[in-house]
Length: 184
Image (cartoon, rainbow, N blue to C red; front, side):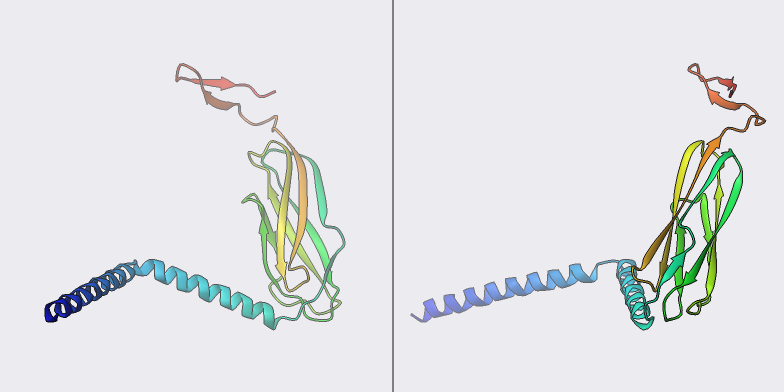
């Protein structure tokens, strides 16, 4: 009977130590996670926390635009055109635009960085670079502010035609050589 108790105790201790080893392995695996990943996760969490704090500290307001769409009409490849969108803070609290972003690198918005008082007006200038953007183009600017809803969208469009005075484009032919293509 003593031997049976001894074997049972040894078995229990053996299983316990295996479980302990697994726990130790798990801890080792967790500590082997690269510090860079942990830092990135912490930075993202901190950014999200600050964003939420900022949202909660800024009372919502309104933003009313004279127009939210602009068509440049027909322009030539390579033209840089600009349009200014005018808006009014239609709410009762200061308007703070935290970001304005174009849908691609060819569309660059400039917006006021200082708060806009209730009833005051502001401007968002949008520049479109038509270089290598032939055909019908429609781009969007997303504005993020302390408004309800948080994002407002502006749209620009243009019909971009080839520059008749531009040198012909070079392309590689089927034989690997360079051939000159004439653009009509």
